[in-house]
Structure formats: structure tokens, C-alpha cells
Image 1 (spheres, rainbow, N blue to C red):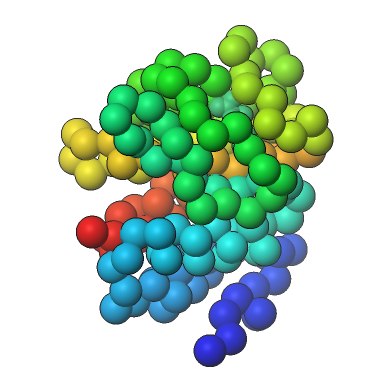
Image 2 (image 1 turned 180 degrees about the vertical axis):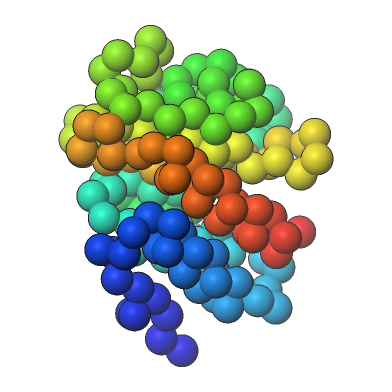
Length: 162
Ligand code: SME
């Protein structure tokens, strides 16, 4: 089945994220395998969001974040709680929007091209499953609309994983 071919990256952000949530629903409907769904979710986002260079997941395993399915250059494998943007979002259990990663104390540089970043925690109630991380070479790339859109995207994902 073809997916996402019709998503126009030039759509206003709210419309693009609404379309992405619908697309994700249809992409993972009936499938509960975590890795399969995260892999397709990362691919859908990465090929639909303009100006991104890394899109993927870190999974919470035995007290640290371990890289999961993603699109982009190879990334650092393990991130401790409270480390970098990912570890901070995981620790604080809230989304973090970073307009300029070079000004974020403790930022972990995986791809030198990254200048802006957004991280959304994946929470089932109080339980942390991991984080969704998107990087961009464009300063100020992510804003509140991206936060709301990616939180909605993460919520759809969480409804479909075991
Ligand atoms: N920059 C992240 C690390 C992960 S990579 O961007 C893929 C951070 O500071 O947590």
C-alpha cells in the first residue's frame, strides 16, 4: 500500500500534523509490534516534515535511553536520564523545544548539521516508554505548533503499541 505520497510539506503546520496523525493511524492500524510501528512512524515523519535531518526514537531501557528506530545519520546509542535534550525531556516528562541547540547546556551533538531540536516524551500514564526526537539544520525550526502536532502524533502511536 502506498502511504504519505499525498502529504504536502508546504501545508500550514496544523494541517500537516492533522494529516500526519491520520496517516499514522492508517499506517499502524491493526499492528501492535513496537519496533515495526516506531520504524514506520519515524519514516513517515522524516519524509513528511520539511527541513529535518534526524527523526526517531530513544527507548527507555534499564534506566537509560537507548536508540531505537530512526531515520538520519547514525546516532549516539545511550543517553542517561537528565543528559542532553532527550534525557532532560525524559527526566522532566515534558516536551522540550530547542531553537538553538548550541545554547542548550549539555546538548549531545550526534549530527553536526543539527541546529534545532524538539523532543517529546512517550508516556503511558506515569510510565516512560522513551522519547521522540526530531532534529533540524534550521535554527528556530520547531515551535508550539510542532510541539502540539508531535504530541498528538505520539498519542496516536501510544494507542497502538503494546
Ligand atoms: N541531540 C540529542 C541527542 C540525540 S541526537 O540528536 C539524535 C540530545 O541532546 O539529547
